[in-house]
Amino acid sequence: MDNYLNVMRARREQILERFYAALDRAGRPRDAARLIAVSKTVGVDETRWGIAILLRTALKSSSANSQVWRSIRSCPRYALI
Image (cartoon, rainbow, N blue to C red):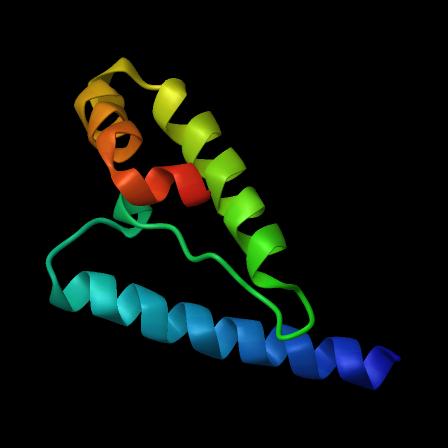
């Protein structure tokens, strides 16, 4: 089990390095985007539910994002999440 955790930690670091490098190339600060992990063993419905909670929490907590939140709510696909 320890070996598996070490492999997963190393893989996470590799992914974060690539993620941050992409943000750097785009000229964006590291907190300008979020990396959301998904699993092959988690279904679409559960993934949509998790993303919806994340969006609601993040966007409702900031009045600066209220226009973004309104845009998301007006999207017909929003009903799916």
